[in-house]
Amino acid sequence: MVDAISSIGSIEYRHDEWEVDVTIAASQKGLMIPPGLSFNAVSQKALLANKTAKMPRSYWDWQGMLKSGETGFFPYTPATNLIYGLREALQMIREEGLPNIFRRHERHAKAVRAAVLEWGLEIVCGAPQEYSSTVHSSLHSRGSRR
Image (tube, rainbow, N blue to C red; front, side, top):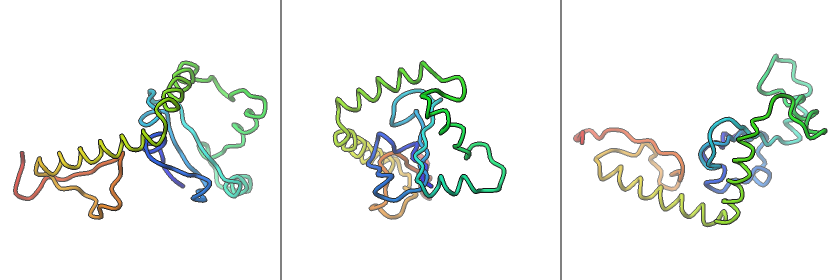
């Protein structure tokens, strides 16, 4: 299971190629619209497990949404204004191109990390090859509180 809320639309993500069973994303952050829409990509393996699971669940029961999706309708009142916003955001993404967006986020992430270090803070991630282009954590340095 992958929480891709901060990465979808901002950095490369490949649900099928990476054989992820469940990806959860949302409209805020990389998709550039207010919170209120969520997106799930679910593998066949996860769908089969969902059908036979015995535990009570609400958020992880996709059956109602799948059944409604067959007719093209939502099982509840849709956030129509956010769907129109999503359509515009996706057009903006197409115009800029994902490779350009990914490079822009990497460039901004490097600038944020440089600023964090200049301010005397410490980057929590100790492995530079694992730095994120969308999420950063830092701590006060031992000797400085600028």
